[in-house]
Image (tube, rainbow over all chains, first blue to last red; front, side, top):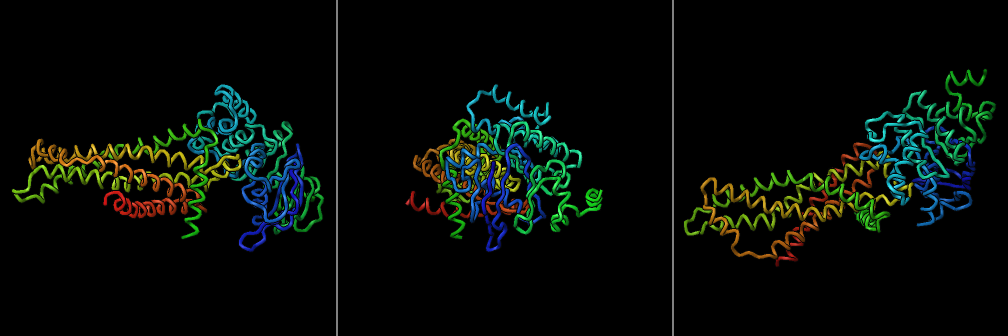
Length: 249
Length: 244
């Protein structure tokens, strides 16, 4: 479980995160949602250690990650898998080399063992026969799946996904959502997804944190969102005609 | 400016930490030898060959006094190639080719979050990306420069002998005259310093890019400009320190 305790973060005097406290639960897909500029990316960057928090603390199963330094912080990082918005695959590496990268860096396995693991995780994300292709040679959806494969190669306890559906067509986006949800359940990871895709919210949001102007405005699950009376959340989630019809059905 | 120097020193300090995995570092180093060194051989050979020829021909053109011995053409070509052209001008050319390539490669990795990916994996990205490039440049550039000297002198010999400006014997005589091995040491010391400047400044500029493709382009240009200026300044300083 990841606990976010009273964290605040400012940039050049402007407060982006205001005293946020929440928990991300194990074996669940935890969603952070909010409008652009609401602070969800900053919150995720604080959680994965790319930004330091000004106040408060983030703990991973009781370990105070945000205050750890050096080797102690590195040991928590090794338990994290991160899926970046654009995939962040290494352009000069093939799919196989990308997925093998964390295995090369953090294990002493033989090449055969590593290849076996690469093929195993690629099967988990329903990708085969793409090992020798470069990121530029595969589609956006495949890039996301390779990035997920790389993120889970070391059996992480925590999986962070930043806008996993951005730039994908609705069908591929659904496939990615289902994949993340399945992997979360199968490997009992604590998964945190940063999204503004309402399909994801309604389909896989087992725990949802809604940020509004840097504050935690609402928490609940996908069923709760359909029934909420929170005005700002309703404005955000049911901003289109299609979603409004869904709410009133 | 002071902030930038401080930031540069911090990143270079991070880069010079012990690599996470020696095997991975060695593999990366070999990749960079190929990308930064081997791929530059053709360009260095072409420029050195023609410049050696031009230096020899210009020297021959300027020696119109019959009392001046013709071996001076070979001697002057040798001195110019070894002391200045190969170490400095080739380094400046490599700044344009290799420096901009390093800055744009690392800069693109920054804006596409590849560096963030390394960081969240618990890998020191400066060490993983910049150290192999600095090491490769500091090892490979001296090899390129010695190669450039040889090709340049051959170019000089070929140009003046084929045009009948001087005999082959007189030119070679000039190459052998007043031979001072320290001039090679001096050239190699300069080359190693220039290689460090080239790779570290380009690595730093790429590493600190913020924004998108426009900023990557700017960082690449800045890397070339700053490295070139620093190389010229250090050329003067090192010459003063080592030759006087």
